[in-house]
Image (tube, rainbow, N blue to C red; front, side):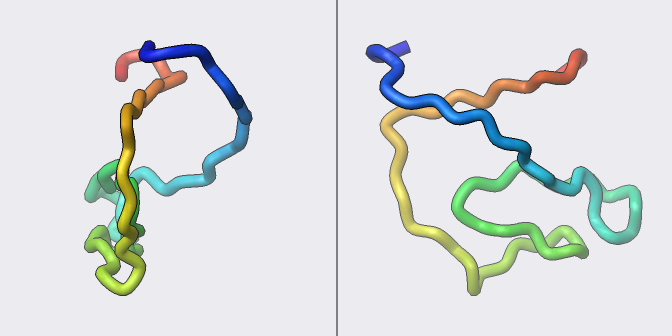
Length: 62
């Protein structure tokens, strides 16, 4: 990475993987929120910036 780890926190993220129809996959979203039908909520749009970001999957096959 680009430096030394300064802080670390392990949290449980309770996210839905599919829309309310039971089949449509929901994307991983940063700075917004998925609605139950799979659309994104413009009312909850965030404004932010990242210097670096890493997605780590703990499940096999991803």
